[in-house]
Image 1 (spheres, rainbow, N blue to C red):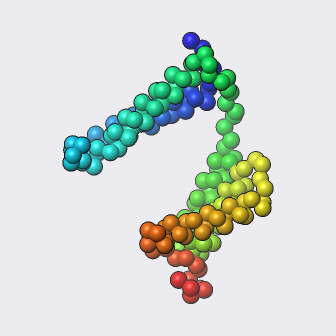
Image 2: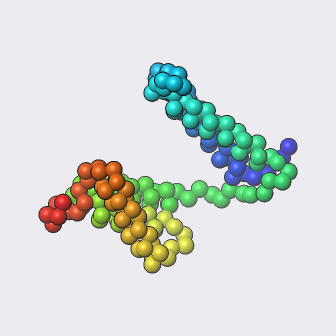
Image 3: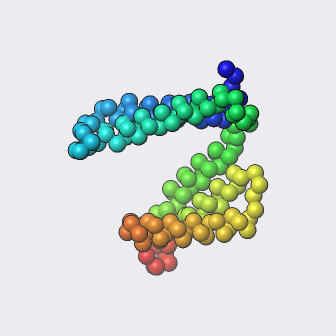
Length: 154
């Protein structure tokens, strides 16, 4: 048996580890039954299914028909940019509001892309901002500041 698809192999390992961790941690909660589920029931079975899917993906990486792939080196810069964008969003949400915070989040995150097209990025930022507004404020009726407080439009 020879490892052919390294992406599937490591994806399978990740799913197995995460699924097993969720299933194991959820055993600290009451399970209940299928008819009367406790708080640990759903995360346990979700973790089990995730681990099983991970095992299937991992085994498929050894198949003779599997596409041969390599894994490129880890891009720490992109991870740092995206993490920083999320932190900036968290700090901006209260004073600047959802609209401006979302636009800033998408624009900063776009800097992590290697093939960046600013026209597409701006269109994406507008689309995601409108989508978040419709989903969270209009649909779920969550209370967020929409605009900066000094504008008096909330």
